Image (tube, rainbow, N blue to C red; front, side, top):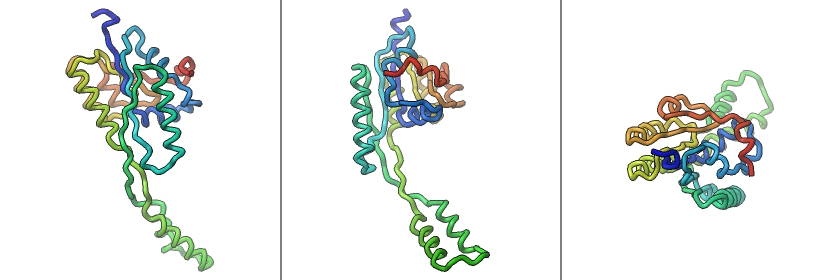
Length: 214
């Protein structure tokens, strides 16, 4: 196989990737050039596609969030025709608020006297927030895993670059490698499971991104 016949596809776990970038204090994440990132990571391999996976934030009901996401994805795909966006979904969930429950327990066992109205207000506050609404990303990880495996099976690439630090992708990585493809995981964050299952785990330091801004 010649160098140029090593076809590389990038699979980006958008949420995990973003939070890993923020975790190393990277400024101006929105100015990153994914054209430069992919070319830098691919090296002598032939970069043929980048697939960016993210949940559609429309269900969260925030026009600002939706507008920011729409602008980001538009700018992302405008960088190069090989870059595409693939959408999962956001689902609301109701969960127990442990902080509110702890507040109610604390007040019920309080040994000192506090103004009665303050006590009532705090208890009411605890009950009002005893259950909280959260939003959960769905279908994104599944899409990435299925696409990595199915595209490997169809011989659409030789090397996969997984931009994520999520160890849940380990079974997909191992399956892709069993098919005969290479997998390189890359992220600013650590992931022991991926470092053990991928051909290589590339830990990206802040300085690595210096040449990757638009």
